[in-house]
Amino acid sequence: MTYGYRTDTYGQLGGERGGWRENATRYALLPLRIFLGVTFIYAGIDKLTQGGFFAATGTGSVGELMRGVRDSSAIPALVDLALKSPSGFGYAIAFGELAVGLGTLFGVLARLAAFGGALISLSLWLTVSWQSDPYYYGNDLVYLMAWLPLVLAGAPVFSLDALWAGRRRRMT
Image 1 (cartoon, rainbow, N blue to C red):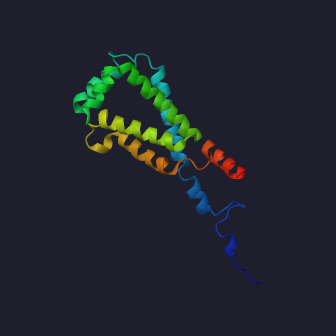
Image 2: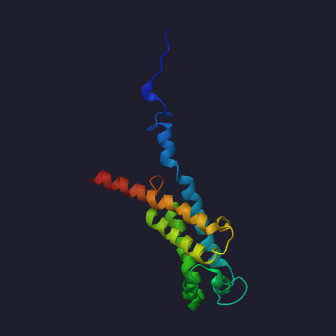
Image 3: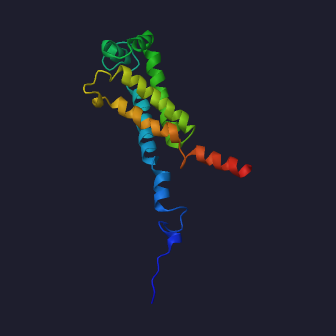
């Protein structure tokens, strides 16, 4: 009795397209996309439902937060711009986080959503968490770095972008 090794099926799982390595590569960014999407949706909703966040003054307000970080930020002019209309800045951040989170989670204009998330994280790093010492204690820098793979790769699986791309390919 002879036993052989079939090289034509190496690494395939249950007839799936590609081997397990290809599948792992294809789905590698999905956990990051889910985490960032849910986190930014939560952050946006939290700001929108938090009493007093959009006020110019008072405990927990965006105005108070901006005044507290102004002198220690990397770009005080950015904080000054936010302080011209703390309420407007607060709403822009909240709705921006919500849009970025939904776009990332559902894969709608995923690269653009990830770029928006990177910009939000960059602005928060340069203002709110800039004074963190050592620098790696500032969580906004980590979020900025986490967005970059999604800016580059988009949402190739389980996304409306992928669904639309597949329909375009079938139509041509």
